[in-house]
Image: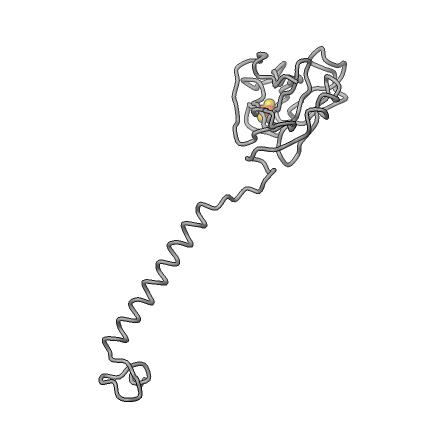
Length: 181
Ligand code: FES
């Protein structure tokens, strides 16, 4: 290939560049490309990948008025956010659906006999090894070693917010776990 297509050893009146100038420009071009790649990679790695409202984020689930209107004993499934909202006497619990035995998804069975005294029917019944949980997420039978994990529930002005990015393990139920409404 004719190197003079790219540079000239001695620039003439036609405005060609010297070998030194050509190499200098090529070096700066390569350095610029590397810098752009480095900055792009940094921005990509820091960019949040979870969309608002998805599992792993803080989720606005309802207004205080709406949850106050739920009858005690109501269990509502938030499928994409992977938790159940359990309306207990004093307030709300957000129960993670993942079984504390080996991690199966625990379904809520509204027609099963109840394991608590909030309603005559309904309990969580893990299909994998038969662990049974009540509306507080407390274990009543089976190999699950502890109650269902919970997510913190807070208020943001008039909205009830569940933080699905913070899994809280517990060894038993106590009232401090309930968000009072
Ligand atoms: S995974 Fe639920 S009882 Fe085993």
